[in-house]
View 1 (spheres, rainbow, N blue to C red):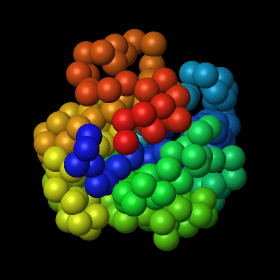
View 2 (view 1 turned 45 degrees about the vertical axis):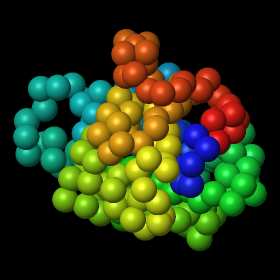
View 3 (view 1 turned 30 degrees about the vertical axis):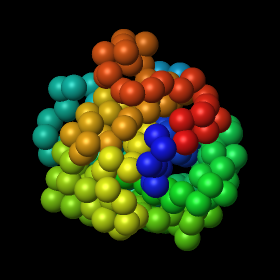
Length: 217
């Protein structure tokens, strides 16, 4: 990685541990609908898959289309109200970001989270002004694993794909990085279910904790 210029992160489950707030929002919704809340350990592995996946987890796959739309919208309303209560940088990530900047590199975020949630979260956690780019799920016409958001991130960070490394905790993250011609790192500390085999994703590297990212930059 001698030509590395930019380190790019997925958001939920890679850069920021948002699962506590996202899980809490789901359980509030379940209680509103007279259903039992779910254990945090059940919700956590699903967080990276977004609001629809979380609603399906809580209410099952057989929810009628209009009801599913309502539940998703209500979930997002609840989550927006408590966006950054218990969300924090993953352990060691502060050192990773400092190390990147001290080396004269830049860094950014590429997430499938919508912009109206991504930008306030980055502001509230104090990272918005430090990021060279923040690409959300609705910033471009296509979302990960499509390479379009990756290419826009490169443009904004003033880097070429081969000068970037992308770090994520889902297969679509690794696919997106590879599709764009970037090196990739699987964040094994993220929101990964027991049913997933991260070796099948064929990332260039795997890190078990955030601080291990420093070894590859």
